[in-house]
Image 1 (cartoon, rainbow, N blue to C red):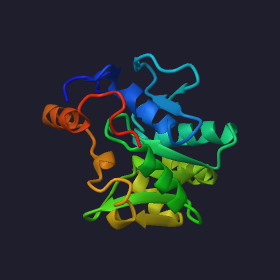
Image 2: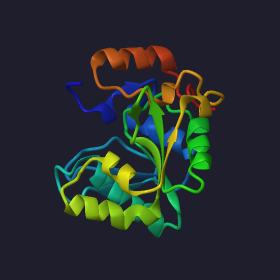
Image 3: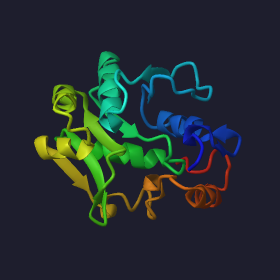
Image 4: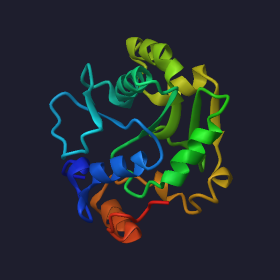
Length: 192
C-alpha cells in the first residue's frame, strides 16, 4: 500500500475507525491489537487497544492477545477482523457468529481460500494458539488443522452479503480506490 492502512481516509473516518464501528454494530466488546510502537487513529473510548507481546509473530500473535482480552471480558468467542476490511457488513459478522455454534473456529472459505482475518475463534482456543506461537507455527491455518473448524461457504453468507464485499481486503492503491467506489465513502455504507 505504501502507507499505513489503518490511517487511510474512508469518508469522514479512517479505515480502522470504520472497521471498529462496523464491528461494534454486531459484537462487543471490540478490542484492537496493534504492533508495539504502532500509532493508531483515535478510537472510541470503549474500544480497548492492546499491543503484540512480541514482534514479527504475525496475525496469530494478535489473535492470542485479542482472545485473552475478550475472554477476560466474559466473551466466549471473538470475531477477528483485519483493519483493511472497510466493506465489512455487521450482518455477516452476526451470521459468522451463528455459524460458529459447535465449532472452535468458523472461517469463510471462498474459491478454495480461507479468510482467517474475517473469522470467529472461541476463546477456549487460547492455549492451542499459544502452543502454535511457541512452536513458531505463526499462521492461523495451522490452528484449523488442530481444532474443530467450520469452513463457511459463500452460499451460507449469500443472504447477508451476496457479493462477499465483507471479505475484500485493501492491499494496494487500486484495491483502496475500488473499496471507496463500492462503499461510496459514506460513513454508514456497509452497515446493515
